[in-house]
Amino acid sequence: MIAYCGFCSAQNFISTERLAVRGVPPRCWECGRELSLPGKGTEPPGETGREPPESNGGGNEEKKDGGS
Image 1: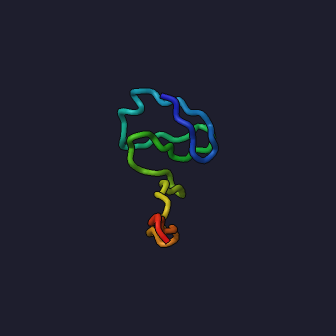
Image 2: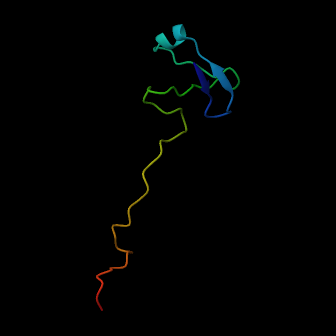
Image 3: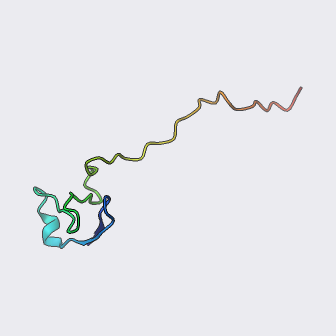
């Protein structure tokens, strides 16, 4: 499996044997930080997941009633 480091963008190869060991997360060969793996459910330190855009609650929309 190829994983890209979210911090330094280095390309990392992770073997299937290494993926089987979940107790110690794989680290980037370049910067040494923990790699974020798909399906792991955690983000690397200092990173946050994407949040959905905030809703304006419809308050700024113009009403189109087709009349006056």
